[in-house]
Image 1: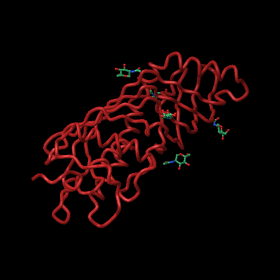
Image 2 (image 1 turned 90 degrees about the vertical axis):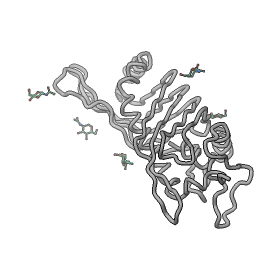
Image 3 (image 1 turned 60 degrees about the vertical axis):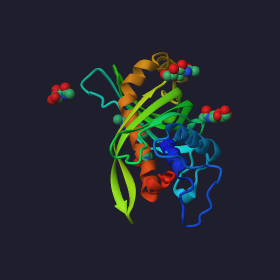
Image 4 (image 1 turned 30 degrees about the vertical axis):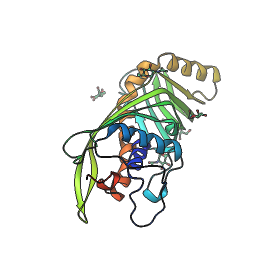
Amino acid sequence: MRILLSIIIGLQIQIFANGQTLPKEVQKCHFGDSDCIVDKMNQVIKNYPKGIPEIGLKPIDIVDIKNLTFGNGDRNLSSWITLHFFNHVNYGFENTTITKVSGFNKDPTKNKLEISGRIPNLVHKGTYFANGRLYLVELNCTGEMTTEFQNFTFNLKFKVIPEYRNNKLYIRVYELVPLVAISRWVLWMEDFFIENSDLTIAVNHVINKNWLEFWNELEPTLLEGFASAFNNIVEDIFNKVSYTDLFLPDD
Ligand SMILES: *[C@@H]1O[C@H](CO)[C@@H](O)[C@H](O)[C@H]1NC(C)=O
Ligand SMILES: *[C@@H]1O[C@H](CO)[C@@H](O)[C@H](O)[C@H]1NC(C)=O
Ligand SMILES: *[C@@H]1O[C@H](CO)[C@@H](O)[C@H](O)[C@H]1NC(C)=O
Ligand SMILES: *[C@@H]1O[C@H](CO)[C@@H](O)[C@H](O)[C@H]1NC(C)=O
Ligand SMILES: *[C@@H]1O[C@H](CO)[C@@H](O)[C@H](O)[C@H]1NC(C)=O
């Protein structure tokens, strides 16, 4: 998740001792000062949607997500479907508001770290491929798709393991547990029945009307995608920047 990324960036923004010019308006916080950390993360998200290459912060406004496959269709049933979503891009992370953090203490390995926030509208655009069977009808279709997760709230709990380099503490994420909730999911798949646009509309309509059931079914896979994207991003930052340097000196 770019969010975490940004967060981290927020923490570390002045750490570079090697003369890189970093935004002066973002100050560091004391260890464990959660209110301050929330504040700085939100500043970074707001002010640097295109990222901060010097510290490895990638753009926040457009995020790639790994390919996902939903529904391991039990092919013995009269109806089954497998959906593959690929080449996806996400929009909306730039409108993230961090609402709560905890655990960013001097020794972050002693406790879980936690970050919560909200994204008003998380939009994915990409390509889908669906195959399966609806009773006697074989499904084999592909097209463009757009989905919107409206009022996306998230909570990420994770543990970190320490690594010392040059006498400095670096951290690596493991055991990441994401929780997410949405108020509504809107999905649109083009060309579901390429020769029958009425049927395509009908299928999309059914999905959107029953979005909660689809969401419940797809959520585990989505969480997996979410966790992996998150890991991907923070991995780089934590690797480049020492945890200690993200904060004001203790004394
Ligand atoms: C599907 O049917 C085949 C053959 O009838 C059987 O061997 C297989 O175990 C079944 N798979 C499942 C998941 O029930
Ligand atoms: C996603 O799938 C597409 C189409 O199969 C492929 O071209 C692309 O390389 C895949 N991307 C990743 C990150 O695996
Ligand atoms: C993010 O917020 C801006 C300003 O409110 C808005 O114009 C934009 O559409 C939002 N992005 C998404 C993907 O919702
Ligand atoms: C699905 O469609 C693709 C391309 O239109 C075709 O290559 C493939 O063989 C089809 N698969 C099935 C199971 O019909
Ligand atoms: C967004 O979701 C949160 C938590 O699920 C809920 O408390 C809030 O009322 C929702 N806001 C809107 C505008 O739907």
